[in-house]
Amino acid sequence: MEAKFSPPSFTIGIEEELMILDAETHDLVNAIEAVLEEFGGEGQAKPELHESVLEIATTPASNTEEAGEELRALRRGVAEAASRRGLTVGSAGTHPTAHWEDQRIAPHPRYRELISALRFVARQEIIFGLHVHVGLDDADKAIHVANGMRVHLPILLALSANSPFWRSDATGLCSARMPIFRQFPRVGIPPVYADFADWERHIGFMVDAGVIDDYTWLWYDVRPHPNFGTVEIRAMDAQTRVEHTLGLAALIQAMVKELAEHFESGEELGHYPHEMLDENRWLAARHGLEGELVDLPDQKLVPVRDLARRLLDRLREHAQDLGSAGALDAIDDILANGNGAHRQRLVYEANHDYGELLRDIVGATAE
Image (cartoon, rainbow, N blue to C red):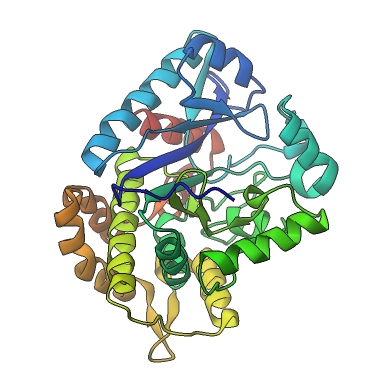
């Protein structure tokens, strides 16, 4: 397998999955081809599994200021393209009222193969995520970083949780997207690998056995992406406000820098039970910032906000070195004023009106 890990390290690329909506009703619309035809971009807007989902992706940037300019331009560009067809776009982890039965599968060989392989499990995956790629210069370092990121994934999920509603139901979860996606195989907290050669052996075994085509059929919350020379973090719900997307990207970039330096110093990562990491992931999806997670070194429950603030304070210097510290103001905002799930509930509970909620999501996405 060719691994394209090379300098410079810590470049960031951001992928957002957006909802394609009717401009009046804000229902999901199977209109990806129409939006792409109007947008005419250079591969930075692309289809996803369902025709009502649009993915936008930034090119590698050195910091969140650069990435933010491009991401905002992409959001504006696809919104303007959609408006020319009587459509609009919105961003959240789920559409509050949509039914997967009404969604068409995009006409792409990979997605048809996916439906053939996973059937109902793939068809009902009408959810929207945020993926952040961080570039690294060494394959073994990428494995070390991916291993180390496992302990941070629940905090990232708690901060980003933005899908409390599903099929016109108040689910009681902060991230309904997480258990919906959990039905896929090869998701969640990944295994630990000794080094890149060990990772290659495991993936090669599955490919040779004929159960997957390549490593991109592994949908773990964090994975090395040798084709891009990055580590990809996939744990987060899509964010309604672009500044929250950038804040999470800045936090992740700083996490990767800290773990890369940890590798370069020859230090060993802590070893924690997979069951406990997975339990923290569930607690984050259920309670978001209002709950507790197990502080793994101390083996005791600690409020999520306390863990997140402690992590944020530790990583600020790394973000400063990378030129991304300003974006961390958005993490302060989330900790002070609530994540996307909290904000969605505030809007909905005023009048129990999903139309009002969707108008708010669309408006905040445009900002």
